[in-house]
Image (cartoon, rainbow, N blue to C red):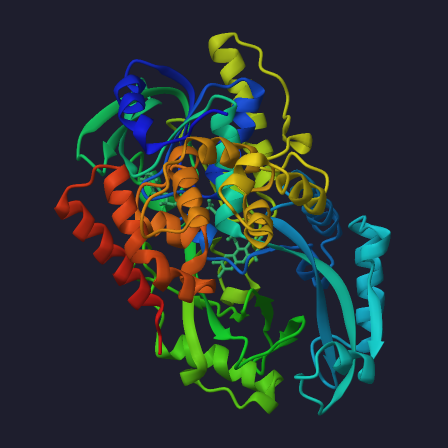
Length: 546
Ligand code: FAD
């Protein structure tokens, strides 16, 4: 297994200046990582540059669903419904450890967004157009059946429910598995490096100036083509090339709140109406229930988007509207997260009415920009932009590259048939038995890392157990550092394990020992250790809204 580690970063940085890449990708969210994977699997030599950790932007701050295109059915956009529905299946097939089918309940109320008849027809049409598998096709419930599925729902006006499948994902880990696969196939990827400028010759961009944010050094890198996949930051990247004209971006903010399951014991994922005619999700995950999202115009800090009292109050009041028995208040909210949608502005439309479709445009100096879109469509977005870039590259350098390969390309960790089979196999691995890793932890590791459990086996074989940290946690940290480009504690606790939002007790228990362990392993100075600790504490306090 090829390592993907901070410990090799310095060497890579010293080499990049000498290389001539076919393609440089700016942004390590799902869009940029998807492009890097598609490009390298076509044979296009690729460098990806990300100024934070992978998925630090919108790609770790979504509702965490690989959606079908139900939203587009309401707008009679049949071709999008068909494409998105089928694409959802591709995402699932290639990364079953990070995407899980989740039945979603759509309660139908008198005077609500969906009528009983229209929901029944709509979901049936959706099954057909989106090519939904037989056992995942929609069911319709009467009032009692709906309440049996979710007894906490408001009774008043309830007519019944539609029941259909969405796919739940871990957005940050999905992004990471794409990045890891791109690296496995030969792409170079650098995190904590920022593109500060372009190199332009004869009205053509032929490289970028990169600032290593860990050392403050600058390097120049040559790339025949450059694509800007900087999500909410795409306009600031375009501005390095030419003044913004034509399309402009609208940032809207989406806030989700997290309740403990003890306070909000939701049994069943629900997609429901708000009083102001929008729709939000309530989703059980681990021991928590999360609800969201808001959709409001935003002009503040993009790195750490704010969460206001109004955001929390809006989601709490929407929750209370649909689940009145719980009598939830803002004090019940355990934590929250906030993400920014980079939408292509459409004059005169409200934030929630603006299309979520992606768009590609090209500057006079040849910079490609891709923005908008969804997690779900990341592979198609990459395919569309690379079809354009590939033909330009072929006419510039005379190379012939293969066509898009990603439809049947398993992501890192996705090489298995069923999780159960993989877990059973993992339980017979001698080193795990020798280290006394119990079956529950093996199940958890397999669920998280999929077929990369094989790399964890290698890590376990080389591991010297350390004091103060349990074997499974040490294994996760070692694997994170050696194979997942973990550089800072926030990388590990927020995006590699999701514990900041969904496993706070675990985070509180392990944050000190993990920071001590990482400091030793990565030779941090005392100053660095203090800085990284403070960074984690500050992220904890940001999402702590109580
Ligand atoms: P980002 O993830 O933001 O990545 C851009 C990256 O570029 C960032 O990491 C940033 O650090 C980096 N960058 C910026 N400037 C530079 C520079 N100069 N140099 C180097 N790097 C740079 N989609 C779904 O399919 N399902 C959902 O359930 C869903 N829910 C959502 C809920 C919310 C609240 C929001 C906001 C979005 C949701 N989406 C959902 C949409 C989805 O999350 C986004 O479409 C997707 O994550 C965008 O990814 P991206 O890579 O384009 O942007």
